[in-house]
Amino acid sequence: MSLPKLKWRVDPAPTGPYRSFSTRAWPSAEYPNGATAGYIINVDKVSYEGFHRKESNLNLKVRIAKWVKKEDGSDTFVWVVSRRTFSTIAEAKEGLNKLLESNPNLMHPEYRNE
Image (tube, rainbow, N blue to C red; front, side):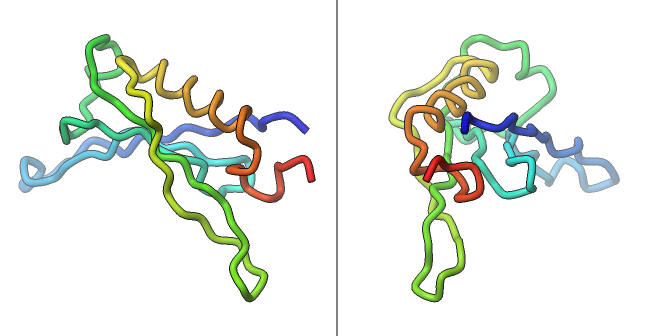
């Protein structure tokens, strides 16, 4: 089984009178079943803004949800951070796909070749 198509989401822009106190999360990815696959983080701790999708000098990493079995048999995940940094959002998305394809043990159990 190959990597399923991940669904990427972006938080809506903050609105309202206190929007300047809000921060916006970077894009996150889910499997088709709604389980968490990972998300992009900015190493410089900058809040996501719409113009970032076109920038090419960002300092990004990817957090991957490593799915594991708990003692009671249920599934849960722990976060694993990529070693590589990415300079664009497109590179980070592709990086998550490549990491999951080359390390199927990180994937949600439903999508592993076991």
